[in-house]
Image (cartoon, rainbow, N blue to C red; front, side):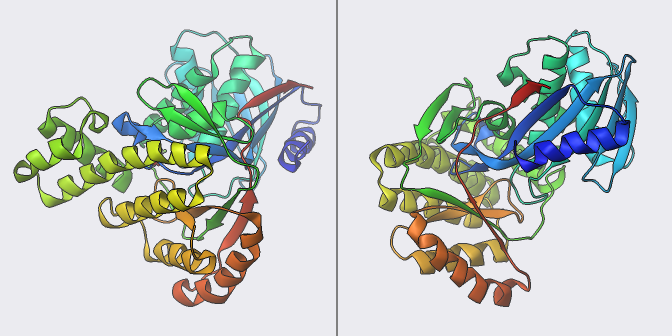
Length: 384
Ligand code: GAF
């Protein structure tokens, strides 16, 4: 059992003075390519990572969720299972649970209260979807505990709606990969049809995540603004979503779009193409092509979508210099801080770590955290 699962069980016993009867777990994710395409009905290619959120639980025979968040300074919360949920004024972590509870109840499912102890090891604010792993782990727990049989993709949709309840109009990527991830594979997700295609990650390649330790938080703000800009561009182009547009269509309407909107749309349209091309590069084991695509994705996020920060741009360049040819590296996730992802041969890892040690602090005033991972399975539930 991984550490976080054991910790959740121990925390449950210590807090509730009894044994848990269930354990739910869902991982965080790293997105290899396809950024800010999901809410444009486009393509993404994430995989689940080795970190996640574990919840040890037991039915409590009441209509209350009683939650102990072992790793949020031992904070706790209690709320009633209802279709009419209020947000907690200052416990953001609990609002994800409140949102998921309300949304499952609103769908007409009948369930009752649980005692819960939660432990997660997805680094917060690192762009690795700690909140999606919490929503999916909790949604799947409710479904399995009360025999509701909610499909994992529907659990993901409920998680996405919980984010909207809190204030972030996010896409469906993070919750889908957390729910449905496959060991040793990235998933190409068509965010319109929700069709998922497994893209095997060749054994000789490793996934490296480098957390810039510039924390980002997606709730509201610039993320929602980007989404609005994309929706406006789609309207001007006369398409349902930017997924349906081409660069020719965009260029034909250039005069009707302000420069910012044009560049936002260019990022999304070209990112969809890069994502599909990356599947082919992976399939052929063509690291050089993958490197071109990932760097082009990074530059597009930096220059057109304007979601990178100098620390992240610096990290990408440090890694490119360290690996030389075939440096498949880019920012991953929503942006404004967070992490960089690299796909590389394991023998390159030491050189990357040494370069980061030598150069990152000087450009950023902080240390980066290097995480070596592979692709993991999505959500699981165990009766204890
Ligand atoms: C965040 C969102 F939650 C996702 O839906 C996605 O838009 C991503 O940013 C950017 O690709 O993680």
